[in-house]
Length: 316
Image (cartoon, rainbow, N blue to C red; front, side, top):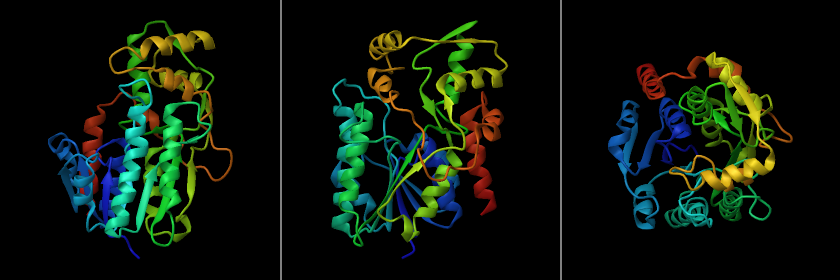
């Protein structure tokens, strides 16, 4: 079966916009569900895209808006919660996938592609984030069959124009003169390019060899967090000394900052970083940070995203 109409949850986010663009360029009908339609009207420059304002956590509304679709792509996730007990993570990473599953089974929708996370593990994950990601992924794959084909992708940190990784550290480095204290400096990542991630999602839609499977997604190279922050400073032309904080100070920093507005760093983040975000085996995606990051770091990213969407629209 060719999946021609796709409901995209999380389609207004960083990865979602890239996936929406690729789906639109392949002549798919894309229905994006969002909390605030007016904030994302830039997506309407894409052909075959409809933007619907709704609450995806309301099961009745969710069912209403995915009815008639051939497939559902779920990208919704959070890195921190307002609470400190895991309830926020559970609502987003477990309850929502279960609600999507229930709606798809009742509406006879036969395809789900799900965004999980590298190291997601319902039983042994060291953080609420990783445990709930694992639980939600497991719930979907329990019902993966000929009746409902599920594919999950587990990326390392994702980079590209508009990312919240390199751009976030760029902002912090500009505000911090001379020395930059860094928690969990030895944590390791294999950054994967957002375009490569989007391509994998779109190619998987009609690829039966991906049905029922889980795929780790990593870039071609591994780095420590310290190396990535040093790379960011060098790319920006900033002379900063990156100071790796001892583990007990990193943990103290997490305990403190998780009570700050917006939770810039939390104990759950600290616990997630106990496991390196790298792929142990399998193929790696081709795009390296050197091929992309210098071209966008420090740019006006919202304008960059808008220009990219316009270019896609003009090609169609």
